[in-house]
Amino acid sequence: MQRFVVLLSVMLIVPLCTSQAQDPSVVDADHYKVEFENEHVRVVRITYGAGEKSVMHDHPVGVAVYLTDATVKMNLPDGSTVDLGGKANHADWAPGGKHLPQNVGDEPLELILVELKATAKMKVKEKEKEKTDM
Image 1 (cartoon, helix red, strand yellow):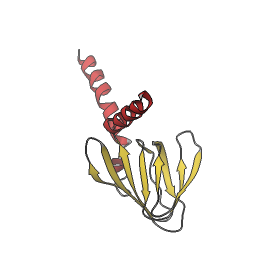
Image 2 (cartoon, rainbow, N blue to C red):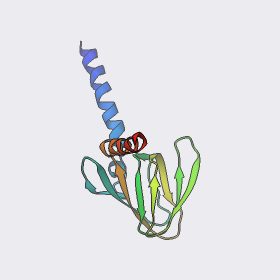
Image 3 (cartoon, one colour):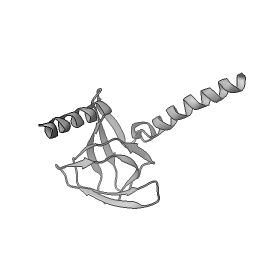
Image 4 (spheres, one colour):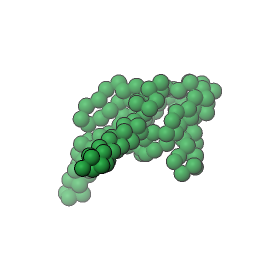
């Protein structure tokens, strides 16, 4: 019985730690600060000095609003990399996923990431479905 309790505890705690460990505001609070959160969105301020990099983490889908120009290398879990950039005062779709970003530019970068939560994504899908049903 004691082995069962220990096994059950591990099965419940490890997924919680794993999911929380992926949250950039938890694993890299130096670069990620939650500015606002409700049941639909989470707004995260992201700041990196020149050359700084993060740790592996993930984000849901969202919209990135660049406050400065940005040149970023995304290191992906499979070992590949993707070079990304953004211009100050522009917004881009952020597909979400797991990555380790690095500011490869010569200047600090700052952006706001508006992460969509499941309730917001479901409402978008419902509206898209309504359009196709018309």
